[in-house]
Length: 102
Image (cartoon, rainbow, N blue to C red; front, side):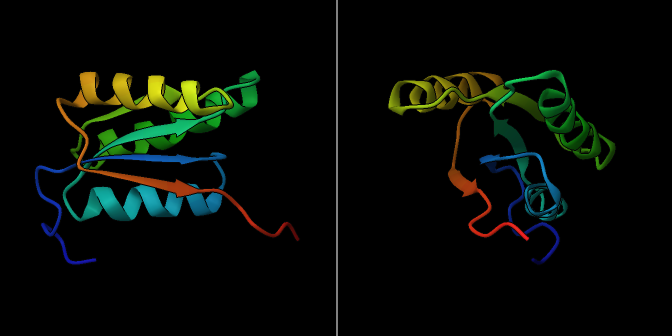
């Protein structure tokens, strides 16, 4: 992605906190986006993974927030509302969930 391509945009990316999730979020931040890092924070390691990604975004000079997402449509809507409130708006929503596990 071209640096500055997403300058000033706000993106919510849900995922599992793994390598693919991190790579997508970092690429969006490098392109200029502020990013809400969403995912299931079911336990401490899962929540720590989401916060680690968010900290990486802050280190790139972009805003980031962790948004816990509970299962179901209501949980997703609540996450979108929280992300929008924290970042001022949401321009793009991405799901970054693994399809195949090795």
